[in-house]
Image 1 (spheres, helix red, strand yellow):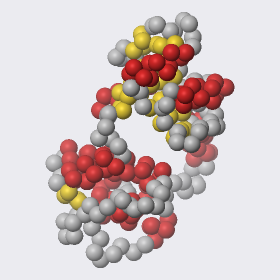
Image 2 (cartoon, rainbow, N blue to C red):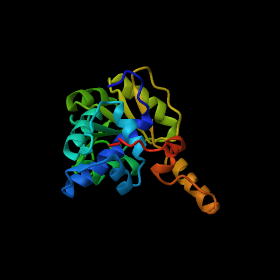
Image 3 (tube, rainbow, N blue to C red):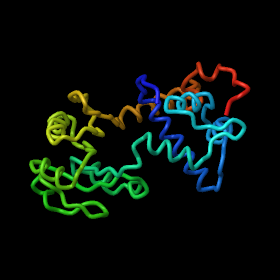
Image 4 (spheres, helix red, strand yellow):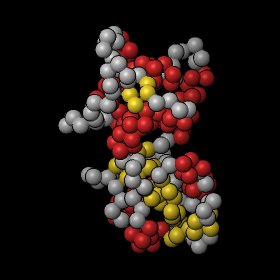
Length: 235
């Protein structure tokens, strides 16, 4: 792997590639070239090669990529060969919906605890598992007992930073934040923000100006790569 810093955009694209490879494997496809992968899933072949080159040489000239091998490599690169245990802070509508999310059943992320400070909710069962709502004051102990390594913040904006501080105090270093607030994390803690309002407002802009050409697919993201001429020896 190259020593240069890998951008979050690159790791996001790796996740997309892995989903595409999963579909190919399910269809019984054994090998595929970067161009065929790009054509089938509306991606960018040059970008695929560039992203993968950060982590090693995976293709075979004249053959392309072995689907199963590349799936295994990307799974390891993304750390998905290890199970991750998730704790949700906030047992409101959003937190409960996340606890019920079916997508977790096919991933290596498992929601194992949910927290709240509402006495009316603490001790009650939520989700499909179901999960008992823990008092947020007991977070450190539950995180330790359940070996939680990922936290999801699903609380109002005004409480988000306080909750993040509590999460960081438990030693958790990976946080997914749904609160519409700018959070300040200490060095070594990664916070990824998911702002539904921003996404919806972006769609509103598109609806208000249907004549404007918006970026709607991965092939349009990096214009420089689009303009590059494919090399004769590409995989």
